[in-house]
Length: 239
Image (cartoon, rainbow, N blue to C red):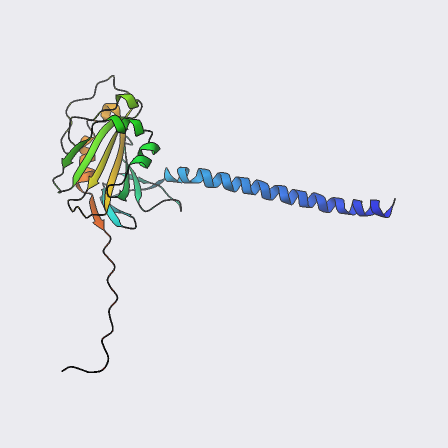
């Protein structure tokens, strides 16, 4: 056996170890990438807590905040470090009604929210209604058929009124209620958007639930930063 053969034989175990280490690192990197991609949506649907009493939940952004009252028995979804402060998702005690609140800049486009719920074309063709709530806030809203964009239409019943009629037994799929809540103060920098999902046969009965959630919601702008106090002038004294 030559000296070269002996050296090559000595390197073989080291090469094997290096290959194994490199392969392991690659697999760990792939697993981490998959986890980062999959964890946020999974954690966003994970139950956080069920309210034992009516509790206010605050949404925050750089320019303002909103407070939503979560009734007793309702479930708040979402855990983990991927959650943002400007959204909250609630589920009714019977699991039939889902409410997703998002704090947005006032007058902003709803394009992102509509795309996330696959209702972009439905919202574009649906009739929108404007209504003033007893709290003084205004809402712009519509009802959409979640499973057939072409048939989306606005309900004739306001968000503060009771159900107009029982839904037909032939109704299928889900109804999405899309509401943008704005404050009476025109300078308010934020607005609150509600995307509520409920089965189509139950949509009429749950309009009062939507109204109650909106009736207790409030908006607030971030107070302007107070100017730094100036130091009194030195010397001279009082006259």
